[in-house]
Amino acid sequence: MASDRQDLSDRIARAIGHGVRRLSPLSGGCVGDVLRAELEDGAAPVVVKVADDAGGGLDIEGWMLRYLADTSRLPVPGVLHAEAGLLVMEEIQAGGGGISASCQEHAADLLADLHSVTWDAFGLERDTLIGGLHQPNPREASWRTFFRDHRLLYMADESHRAGRLPADVRRKVDTLAGRLDDWIEEPDAPALIHGDMWTGNVLCDGGRIAGFIDPAIYYGDAEIELAFSTLFGTFGEPFFRRYQEKRPLRPGFFEARRDLYNLYPLLVHVRLFGGSYVGSVSRTLDRFVG
Image 1 (spheres, one colour):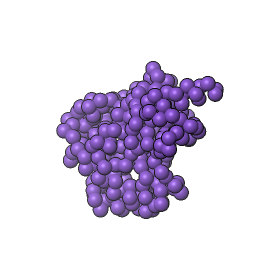
Image 2 (tube, one colour):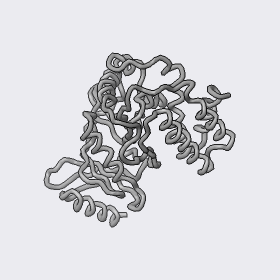
Image 3 (cartoon, one colour):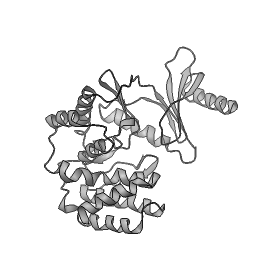
Image 4 (cartoon, helix red, strand yellow):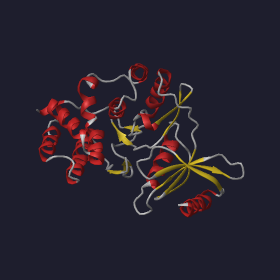
């Protein structure tokens, strides 16, 4: 184990040009292990992710963080080095303390600004990852087509192939996919979204957002980001009150589209973990297609 740590320290040093004085584990990270590296020469500490070189996908995570930094004003960690099995990032100073009302309001300002960044199609110039899973992003002129084929049906297929989504539930996804026009309309324009907006990816400090981490970016309907932020109770009334001052929501979001859009992250969790998430997917489907 000591030799493994030394090998990793040497690898980090070669990547960023600073010797490593100490490595300590951090929580989080669907893709690989996360560590804090204290550096020699008085350099600021960095955060390091380590994964399997063959399929770790950390090069994609680094690309997404750089894309957000270059294309938007969303606060994200600076990327110092990115390859498939190693990602080195600047450390974000976050004091914790939970996502307070003032932190939610700041998040609303930042995400409303992010969602104003647009593109000429839904999707992205390359595929990305969510929770370590492949996330296809082919260009589509229609949001309904993109959401149906490359989010809902794609992740349902992946979950079923993995043996975690029963066949009867998979068939209900097909039924819902054929009726999405009943509930989902085309948004005004594709919006750049962070894509994995849950509590663990939101860093707060002193009642303000310090940064967002672990993105799963693409251009979609901004509402799918807002829906995800409610799935595990990340944001609530203070966030939505402030967000709607800047980008009013279309009627029907809380009544229907929020639950429809949350089928995607729920299916991601079915693919990763199975278990109770299957029931959550099934209950949502029963609400819309019986």
